[in-house]
Length: 174
Image 1: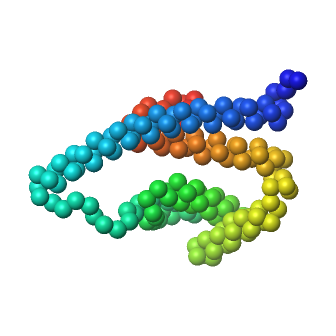
Image 2: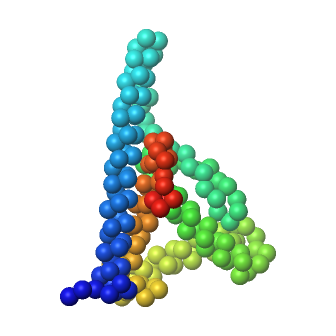
Image 3: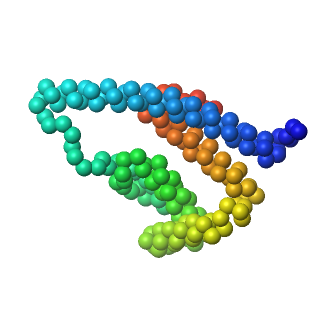
């Protein structure tokens, strides 16, 4: 049985193809970054040996991320590797805060951010209550929505890895 272009299986098939292409881009860029990081660590080790500096810094590495919420920039620290999650959380909060600011008009910044955080948390709680059997907003089934979200996240990761590795990204891939 062949699926029509708008059917769920055709949509899922297209999404899976996007995921596979983005994963291939991630793997290529990650390989380049790993080789660069290995060379960098080796050079740092050699430089420390020449300079007589101790090796290792002790303690967990912290990453710094700049996020914008409600038109204001914030520089935040997070565990190394948690940057994508922090950026996604900030983007969601910013989207909610911006929508609230448009609908409410002039509101104190602290009140706006509190209301946005409560709305986002409420959506999370509602989603947990519904569980996977309830369906999702926009008429998508949970599996379709999960695939779309996964495709979007992997495509963003691929673009970030390519940028970090100094690779050109074609407009079709971005």
